[in-house]
Every structure is written in C-alpha cells, then in structure tokens.
Image (tube, rainbow, N blue to C red; front, top):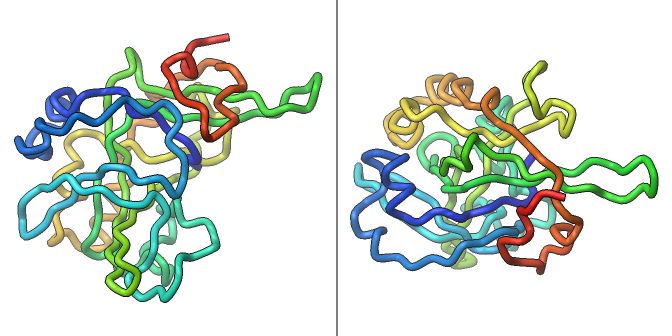
Length: 224
C-alpha cells in the first residue's frame, strides 16, 4: 500500500521523466518540496482532458462522483486486481486515469525490541522522480476533485519484499500514454498496470519523526 509519500522534484524534472505528459504551463508552478504527504491532503496529478494533458490538484482520498458525503472508508489506495469492478473506482477506471508525481514513499515495520513502528524510505535509484498510476474523480455534489494511488501485490524476491505485501504502482515510462489515454479500454488498462518498476525499488530506515503526519522537512528522509 502507500499511506505516505514524498515529492521533492521540480516540474521541469518531472517533465523530463514524463516526456510528453507534463504541459509547459506546469513549469510555472512553484510547488514546495513535501516530505510527508498524507491521505486527505491535496496533491497534484496529471490527467488527460479532451486529449490534452493537464496538471490538476485534488484530495488524496477518492470521492466517487456519486457520493453524497466524503467516504469514511479508506479510498487513498485502489487494488489493481479488482478496482475495475468496484463501485468506488469502476467509473474512474474506465476513463479517469491519472499519473501522480512522486519521488519516494514510506512503509513501516514493527521493531522487535520496543514494539514501535520503524519507517523506511522507498525510492528508485538516485531518487529518480517518477509517477504513480492513479485514478481521479470529480464530485459536483460536494465540489471535490480527488484521486487515489493504484497498488499491486509485492512481487516475491525483490529488495523491498519484506516491508509490506503491497506496493504502489510505478509504471514503466512506455506505459504512461496508454494509461492516460481515455480511449484505452478496461482490459488494456489492466494489462498496462502489470508493467511496473517494482524490481528497481530500494529502501533504507529513517527516523520515527515521519510517524507524525504533521512532520515536514528534508531531514525526514535522512537515514538512521
């Protein structure tokens, strides 16, 4: 799963990685680095609107278009195996797929000595910027734009397999276009999600300050 993540690249850097999918207008954004993004906070994401890529902002906790109130059950992640036929995600999976820029994310393990939760920073080599596969929704009843991050079962044998049984999906770069394209069918979109970069992820322990969702600052990703 993914319950906290990191954004520490500029839009120019994301544009270099997400070739062709970050509009030039986004380069004028002056978003600050964020080292402890938590569910329900607003985050930027890239979506295709009328065939053109746009950077939008929305609540990280999907609010389906039909909801009459903010859902109380956790909708900040969506399982890639069954999101396509779940009521909360079904319509978004058909045509409201997005990319969520990130630089890394956190996972936790239980400390054998004191029983506390030890956080780990998980990232690509050299902290390469990337994008999670996501879904987005617009709820006019509540005037809320929102999104969620797609996850998959952690493949066996990869470096981070001992940290959690699920991981967020970081798409291979040649899959970005098909994922964003509103003409991509459901079956094809499901296939796109199998082309991810899980095997490239690496991790190291960081301090427990991350456990407070109000904590911020680059020191949060310093190794212990």
